[in-house]
Length: 367
Image 1 (cartoon, rainbow, N blue to C red):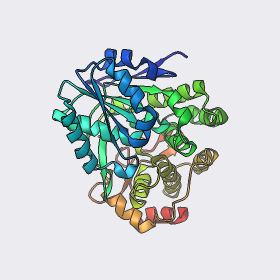
Image 2: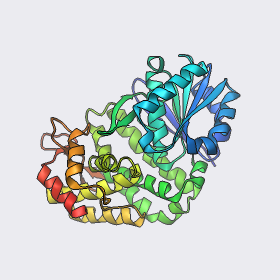
Image 3: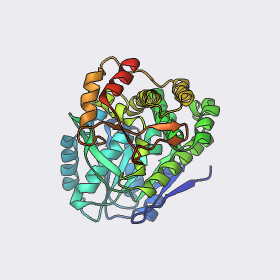
Image 4: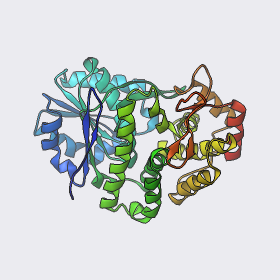
């Protein structure tokens, strides 16, 4: 299969997302080209380390001495404590500012390892090697790194762009079904905020996607990365249009926080999109027919559209007030006008201030 390269055209630090089948076998050549270093440190969670850690470590070791450090799998382990633990282990391994980090795994590993790289010796190079669909199409692209706190998701972090992203779709073959499907929430989101034809194509190719057909997956990952790369290039640090990528995330992040990070990110975002689309209809912002179409699409991929039992409206509202998207304790959400077109606020912003009573009503309907 032909390798596909998508450029993320940032003015100061452009980089390539290289995707295809069998890329892990090409890792020595890819590292030598995109991120040569005196030493590498692979950071992975305990599950991914068992599946791919030795393979990636041994491949990188043909370029430079390589060590692997791990943390226990689970979003609830994306913490400041594990950031400190991993940083100490890098110091002990002999990594210095001429070294580089290889972030191997899903979005949690990418966020945590990226934050380690962003802060180690005030910032060293890193490469994203995503092994989940969600990480390939979303978390690994854009340079957001960080950790969660008990008060909210990603409240501590930094922007730190990778030198490159290497996405081998072969790793998706062994991904548990619920994690694979969860990644589709972000793909549907990309279509919902930027490309109606892509959204419709995801539904048309649903069977091939769920069968994990390689060519279909490469096309899916490629288009999602193109969408995100274009938005990020316009607004690297989320001062404007990049906020459209947060559709579903105001409610979604609150759901994750309320659930103690026991809900998959993609599942929480799916619920968030359903709730926020209904909220948009209630506010006369979102087309009612497209809100129904979005809910149907989520259900066709077996994604949740209702709140989990532990997510009580008042607790969710409290989490939203603390979310980094809020301003002066006012809840803000990124809504859509219709599939493929994001909504603008009253002053032209890419987010909309949400009255708490309106949000509470939308949450109550989804409970």
